[in-house]
Length: 523
Image 1: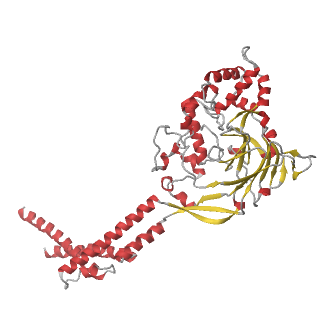
Image 2: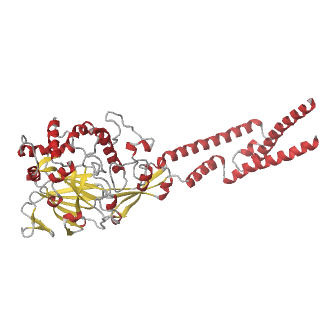
Image 3: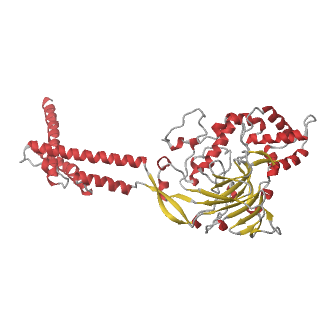
């Protein structure tokens, strides 16, 4: 028994010393034969030991420097997975869809339409028609809560009671007292060709209430196969509109002025305050020139995780952002970052006040009425914030680390169009007239431009900017970067991997196998 134990101990000791000797031998042969820089000087036993130690330290330091730089390169890749560059400064203008144009009268409550509306209302005996006409100005509280600057809650409740007694919704009332497109828009042209305004402009909801929109598609089933494009530049190749703001009909405005508010935005984006905005005064001719830009993402970007690329493709949104949402508060034709924020604002209004403001394209949800105005005013700053789901007294982060916990979970678009504008205007001569062919000095078959505005919206150039988002580092880039660093600091190549496998795996196994056979034969 004792003899067996001694034999086992001897065998274990031999195994350890044998493996160590094999590794030492293979390491010496590897250093002597490898093409890696500096290793052969470590294995030259004829040189002083100090010199060999210095070479070992040098090789180790060089290898550490390579690893540190590789780690820095990897960290840069992790924080900058995509790269956005200007692909072209001469991208043909025909490639850009013409923007949507939303025109709103600054006057939100028509005096004449309000008189007609009030005449048909059933009103309490203690409320006169004249008083009710004045009270109808309070409808602007639904657009800008607190616009009157003093407590009008009692007046709002009384007006809402009258509307309820007549079995009408807020949206019905707004449609009846807002100037319609047929009277707001007098003459319309598209690409220099006279068009009926009601054929190319439709009444649509915007952040300023009911307005008139061209080339705007808010519902999924309204997107045409091909949106409007223009292959030319200059004011005669875009949209020209003669607008009659009817200053004598002003009853309740959103700002203290006469004129129009024009919003230029992408055709599938809700016209919110983030749109390009231009105020147009009366008796003037305005030229709004558009310098469109496009940013698109290459297909390879979609292979990256959303948390890595930090953007989302519109076709991914329903599966990723809204997969577990049972009921959407708003209905949009297509996902975009701005549409997502609009839906978030509507959701917060519903949570805080139990309703959604009428100016959103809603999806069978209770519309906020005048009684809800006080609640909307209380959360106004929160609803208009760029991060709607953070309380107004909260501190906004300087950097969003996790893209999925951004504002309302909304993720920026991977591909988008933007339409920056430049504007100029001149004062109209009140003695001239305008018809479908242009300006005229006679009134025959022409429209007087007095208290009108002439608006031209067009592309500014035959070319535009195009930006490309692509993967900053692919596996090929990383392979080349790491290989270059290892080659620079250590002389490393792809064959070096096979050398390591050959000397420290294959040859070690073979020698260990033959040594074990020899040892068994000796015993």
